[in-house]
Length: 221
Image 1 (cartoon, one colour):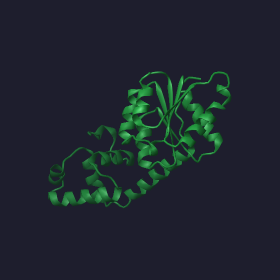
Image 2 (cartoon, one colour):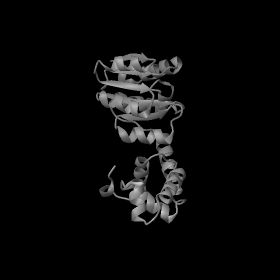
Image 3 (tube, helix red, strand yellow):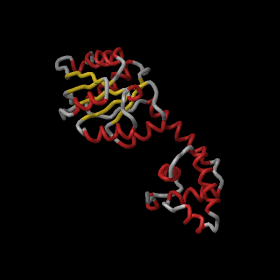
Image 4 (cartoon, one colour):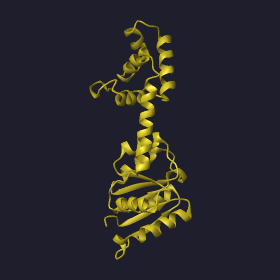
């Protein structure tokens, strides 16, 4: 056993105590039980983490009062002796991709997973290892394939403009390079963002990297 403490951060009492019971029944912890704590809110969770012990955090992000994925990452990075397992009913592909790519100490399993999968996820997390369920992996793969297909909807001109956006060039610079008006480039930009379901140049850059439109040597953002 690695974790000295296990924090179950879940507003649903039934789920929280069910997780504790399942973890406590694992053969690995029959002789020496870790300390269990229940956090019903962000401030309570942070207070427990301040002890800076080896900690496993079982967190239902969708029901907790963390405002954003970015706030979760900041919390994880601040408490580097803790390993987090997201135990939730539903997490969006974009959320999953962001948190799993941002930290190697965040894992995920869904509440409707079979008991043996849940036990495995808990065991990995308590050992300080990341656990990503097969279901979460399939969601990410499906979403990546869908995004790659959406690229096919871009015209050749839009792909060229997307590449220039990803290289960090402004609308004015792109217009000058392509001998086009700023209005035309803005129209291309809006169409690209709409088709790819993205909202910023940073998202465009990440997409262009994944799609192979640019390589890392062209990544300026």
